[in-house]
Length: 89
Image (cartoon, rainbow, N blue to C red; front, side, top):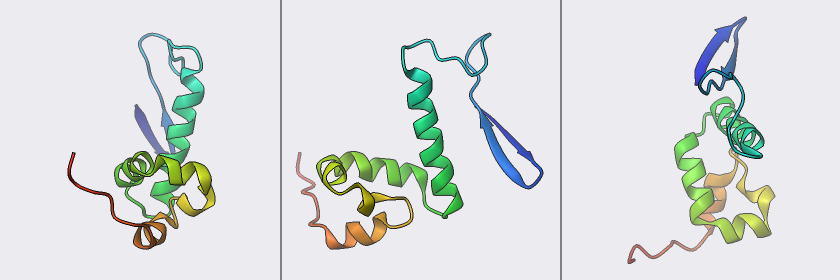
């Protein structure tokens, strides 16, 4: 991944092999675009993107039922209201 910081904005270019922007798997580019959008949104609202994506996985069922409560700018409040997950696995 290459980060270009031009004109006060940030753009990210995905580079894979000799075909920049092309993903070898079917729908891979769409999935990559989705994750890049989430990561960039986290950066814009000062959220930790790794923490955010981890919490989305940990609370996948809740995210699916109420996605508006799990946006990068409000997921911390939702976590505070949710029941803590058991650490025993």
